[in-house]
Length: 269
Length: 247
Image (cartoon, rainbow over the protein chains, first blue to last red):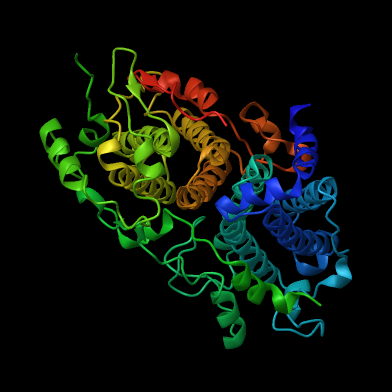
C-alpha cells in the first residue's frame, strides 16, 4: 500500500554507507540527524496536543464543553492528534530512533512547569480558557512545523508527511478560532478584536486578564505581522487594494525550535 | 505563433484595479527582471535561473522546470483561486446569497488569494507565465451551494497541491514560502467546509481522492499532474507541465 512505502524508503536510507551518506547530505546541510531531531520535536508537540485533547474530551462536562458540534470538533481534533502521535512513532521506529515516553503526567496544561498551579489552572473548569489554550497550541504547532520543514528537505517521504500533518493542524486552528469567535460570553477575546480563522497581524485574540500569561501567549503570535515576503511588499501589491491586515493574514510565519521550546516549556513537567 | 494571453484575472476585478494591457505587463516584467527580490545571493545564478521557461508553443503555456516550474505551477493555481473569488464577490447575488459575516470572510479570502497570486507574479518576474484564461461556465455564481462547493474544491485542491509539491522544491527558501501559504489555504478550506457543514473542517475521509490518509490524520497531497487534471476543467488556457520535476 503506497502510503506505507515510506518504511522501506527510510530503511534504505540507513543502508547508505556512512561516508557517502554524510557527503551527500552535507552538500545541503540537512542530515538524517536533522530529520530525526525534527521528528522527535514534532513527537513532543503532538504528544502535548494529544494529551491535552484527551484530557479535554474526558472532562468535557466539567470544563463546560457544549455537547453536539463543540464536543464533536474537539473529539475530531483529539483523534487526529492521537493518530499523529502514533504515526510519528512509527516513522521514528522505522528509522531506529528511540523516543521519550510521554504520558498525561509529562505535561502540566495549567502552564505551571509541573506545579499544576499555573496561569491556565482553570482550563479544566472554564470553557473559554480551554479554547484559548487550544488555539495557542494549534497556531503554535502550525508555526513549529513550518520552522522544521527545511530540515526535512532531503527526505521526500518525511517532508511530505510533515506537510500533510501541518495543514491538518492549520484546519484545527481555524476551527478553534471560529469556536472562540462564536462564544457569546467568556471567550477571552479582547474587546474590539474580531477573531478570524487566520492570524491578523500579531494579534493573539486572547486576553486572560493575567499580564504574564498574555505575554507568554503573545510569543506564539509575534512575527505574524510581517507584510513583506522574499523582498516583495504585499500591502497594496501591484496596485491591488490589499490592506496590511490581509497582507499579514495571507502568509503564516515559522517559529524556530528554540522559540517553540520556550513557548511550550511551562507546559512540560 | 499566437498565445492566448488573457488577463481575465485582473480585468475581472475592475473595482479594485484598472485593467492592464499586455504592454504594461511586459513593461512591468522587464522592470522587475533585474530584481531578485531579496532572495539570497547563493540562490542567484543557481537553481533560480536554471529553470527558465522554454518558449511557449502550440502545446500550451510551459510552466518550466525546476523550482521555477513549481513556482509557476503555484502561480497558476493562485490565479485560478483569485479569479474565482473575485467573481464571487463581484456577482450581483453575492449580497443576497451570503450573510454579512460570510461576505466579509469571502472578501478576506479573495484578498489573500490576490496577495498570493501577485506575490508569485513578482517573485517569478520574467519567468512568470502569463495570465491564464479561466473557465467558470460550470459554476453558478448566483447559487450559494455552487459557490461554496467550488470554493471547497479549490481550497482542498490547493492544500493537496502544495503538500504534494513540497518534495519537488530544491531551494529551502521556496519550500518555506510554499509552507507559509499552504497553512493559510488550509485555514480557508476549514472555514469554507464549516460554512457548508459545521464540523467538517478536517473531514479527511472526504479527502481520500486528494491523497488524504484518515487513519494517520494526514491531509491531501497530490502530484502536479493529478492536480492539473482536477483543475483542468476550470482553466481554458492549455498548460504544459511536462518539464516539471517529478521527484
